[in-house]
Image 1 (cartoon, rainbow, N blue to C red):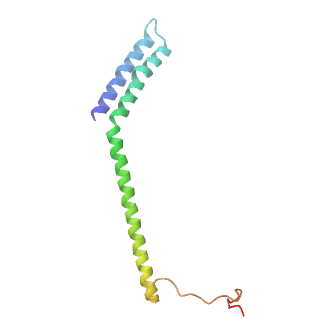
Image 2: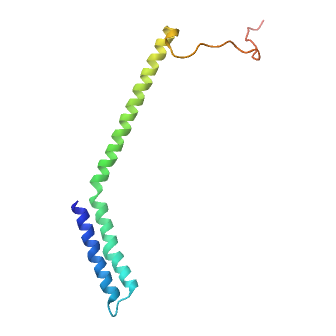
Image 3: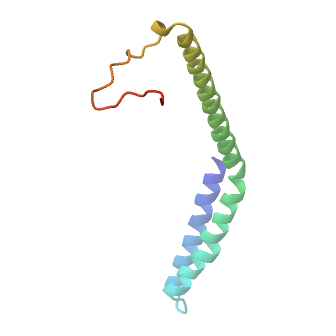
Length: 114
């Protein structure tokens, strides 16, 4: 909150400096733009970047924690699926898969070599 107030105050000050330079007798609009960019936007962008580092770190750690929780959930789902497959191997009627249909007439039967 304080950072936002500082940013707004500094932008206001540099804007007023730029307006004063643009309206001065010896001033130019180009000089006003350069003043606003070099005294206003550039330093404020550096300050905001530096002071927002802890927030970026918290956001990165939160993303990593979320990814780790999703990975663990996926591993648990895979483990439960493997357990269901092992249980269905013992009891074939327990799985939710449909029964196998007969082979079509287009497929030749497999047999041993004579």
